[in-house]
Length: 152
Image (cartoon, rainbow, N blue to C red; front, side, top):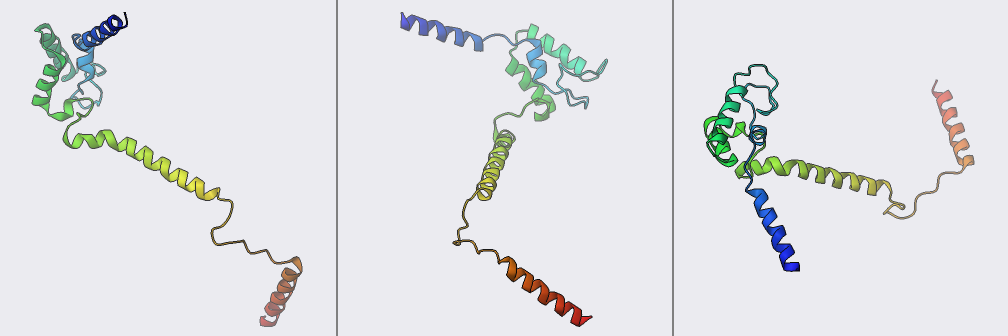
């Protein structure tokens, strides 16, 4: 019974990866080339000279039976890597994926070190020096005031 359950789960998971991509999924994977910085699906320019033809081409390619990866490869061949809405996991693009996590990790480490230093209970050099007694401070103040009066 247990083996049958795992087999059903494996088949369901295998089937979800093979599902055909929708037009919206492909449009969200591509950046509009009109300069708006949005995806093809999100471009809000009326009669966009870049987004509208791209949407029509995507619809035609999906109707012809092409899968998402083939369509993205064709657009990447035509426009270059900049047309993809997220960087690929190849070559120098790994840096785009790793840098934000490395920055957060470095910041967390830095903040924890600063907090640790602030919360130390004792100084590493030994016992702290006791503050001077009030009488010593009064004598020092009187001496410095006398010196100041002699100078003027």
